[in-house]
Length: 281
Image (cartoon, rainbow, N blue to C red; front, top):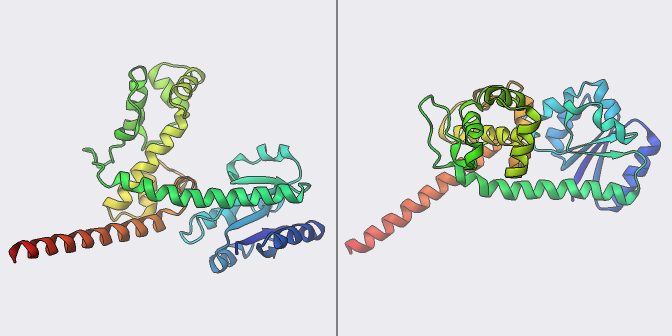
């Protein structure tokens, strides 16, 4: 049964939400502030957190940064509860997984919750497949992972992607790439998006996440060291983007992948020994 933490002070709204969520088969933990959210989340490991944006703003969203920096809670999706749609654009730095208004219908609330739970399940399935692609990725001379293989080979954009591959570990942005290559930012992002189906910023992020995967598997560096090495100045931002791609935190991903690879290696060795013994007989 999915477990949800909801953070809201308005008793009337809480009653409506609790009734709706319990009728849909969800377990609910109610809180009226963010002081103990981190502790409760570590203990309960909820499938989703719904928090009033007003309360989050008062806390400067510190509770969410704390959750993102803890490998146990970094994978928990967050939905902000807002009064009106315009509030979505007031605090873009909080980067929630979703938003719902306090005046939404029961059906809309259920859809928002189920969408986040389904997205989380899909992420976990997808990252298991993607993780195998980094095992054989080489590193380049300056000890930075070579991410060129994940970038598209498009003649008229070769200089763009070569620049990204060489500089993803620096705090570069769309404007930096455009300026370095003599394009306007608007023109460059339009061409890249229309040609590849992804924005230029998306390609930069994918390079950083791929490089982080390689370093997580091939080195013993700490997650924080790796985040800084692949171009992240904000550690909470790295944790969040990694979770968006892989459905889990960098620490958990590393442990799972190394355990899986070790198991597969032992299995291969056992198979090889068995075959050699058969040949000897």
